[in-house]
Amino acid sequence: MRILVLVLLIALGSGGCASGSKNLTPRRPWEKVFKGPSIREERFTSMGSPFVIRIWLTGAERAAPDRILEEARQSIEALHAKIDPESESSDVFRLQEAAGKDWVQVSPEVLELGQLAQQMWRRSDAMFNITYRPGVAPENQKGLDLEIDPPGKRMKLQTVITKINFFGMARGYAADRALARLARHGLAGYAVIAGGFVAAAGKATENPHLMCIENPKRLGTCGYVVKPARPGGVFYLGSSASLERKANIYNPNDFWKYRKGGVIVTGTSGVWVQYAATISAVMQDLVIGKFLMQGEPKLAAVFFQEVGTTDVTLSGRLEPFARVEEVKVAPRRKSAGS
Image (cartoon, rainbow, N blue to C red; front, side, top):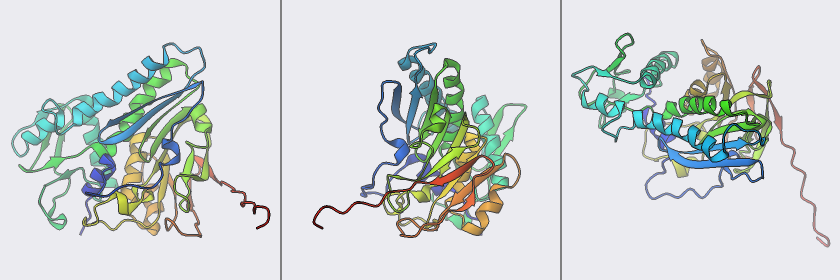
């Protein structure tokens, strides 16, 4: 039976907790508020996920900081408006209304997302699937239930009850769009953060709190620092959902067998790094390395076995994109008289 990644997509896209549960664990290092006279940030929710846009100023920007942040935010929210299943004006709403019946004209962005989803479905051996049929058991779900007519700029869901969810992959795509806008303003650095996904450029790629692999023994702190091969260039870092605190994040009644540890992915494309971080959360160690290096674009990952264990060993490598250095924590000094 081929697994479908629908529930995982929804969990990643929404950041949703199981009903009645509370996430009592600390905020991840890269999501914490940054303070400084040359740093500004904007926080909001889009595509069901918390976003942070953070910029490092030089004093010679081509626009005021608030305007720069708003422009980047609008690029993300404009994409959300096209794929929001609750909005009657969105492409996704119209696709679902016409499911099993008619073709629907879609925006260039949604057309590209659909084509990327087809590539990801094939590359993952049919594990990654953005379409689903509500109320149908996982083993009875169909394959990717989506037709695309690129010349006609239109798409169609083949079965009447089929739904489609772009949120799990669209955060990386949205980050790519936002980075392109931030690059116009002569900033010293900038970053877009969405849950476990970080896209950064300039000074941001040298910040150890952003270029960080969370310490699986001490959640909320950095256990390893990622050193990009090209400091200052655009760099993507994605952490799989299983690095989160599973008992607080996921519905214990779902059918997924999650990794006990985490996977950290980097590569040359935001949408592909987001995809790889999504799918790898349900992959076992021996499969991940082989899976990530198939085809284009190239991806690389490191991973570990457990969260909360006393002995943590990273496997895999981020080369050629980056190297990983462990953060050395000085032992606590004993107080006088102890």
